[in-house]
Length: 190
Image (cartoon, rainbow, N blue to C red; front, side, top):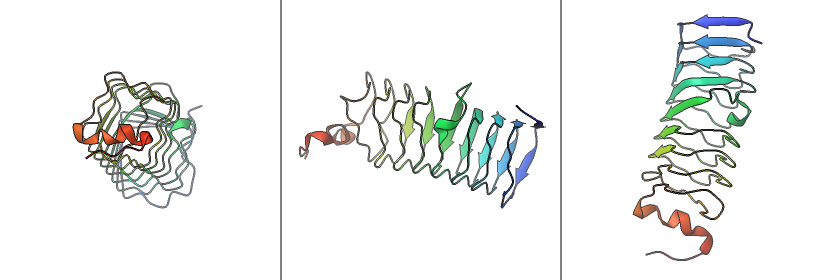
């Protein structure tokens, strides 16, 4: 239940958030250079908001609505996006560090990741159909029973995806990344 509502406000250089920011709706707000590490955003909603150069490491997003939210140059290490509200879930990530984050079971059709580090992120059972991974590092990411149909990995690096364990019809890969699809066969490609 939303108890606070904040609209069209800009926040910058907010730091050391030890309080909970739960049950608040933020609409058309911008956040720049804020430190939200360990913050609790549970049951809050962000609608048409932008975060730039913010630190969200290990923040809590249980039941949080991310509706048309843009993250640019943010640190989102270890975030459990799978606990976010599914209702109208839509976000984009540019130049973000999303290492160790979890997206298990999320519907992320057409989601865009650009110039991001997604090291060891878990995309099991997620719907990433038509998603774009532009210049992203996907080292040790988990793709298991993931819908990758029409997803674009042409400029992504360091991925290892099992075509037999994922739906991949019409997914796009570069010729140089083909080894990332054949890793389980222990073959050498020269």
